[in-house]
Image (spheres, rainbow, N blue to C red):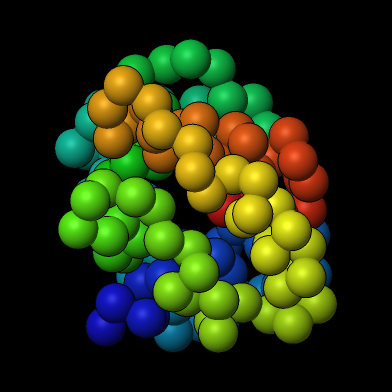
Amino acid sequence: MRNVFVFLLLSVSLKVVLGAIELPEHLKGPAKILRKTCQAEVNVSDDLIEKSKNGYLPENKELQCYIDCLFRTVGLYDDKGNIIFDEVAHLIPIEIKEKLDAVSAKCKTIHGSNKCETAWLTVKCYFEADPEVNVI
């Protein structure tokens, strides 16, 4: 199940950024549930979520914790609280794998003052390094 959610998160991200990856019909329901669950948990607006998909990532606690919730829900943290995209590399479409690997080397060691800030700083780093490798 964890792999389904990780694939879902990455597919949604890539679909939005690249416009080339269509989310399979059977994952559209879980995608809505994931968004609804995390949105309710942190009370972030629809508008801010939509804008974040295009790289608008203001220093906003609700947005930071929304990203953390997505990562936490799909199991993208190790036991020490580090974000572990490498573990799910096999789920990533080959056409962006090289780009993701290059960006991961730069962004995977970022740490904020808490998990919410770490998740946000990591996403921000990925987007700034290469907008085609958006992970939100």
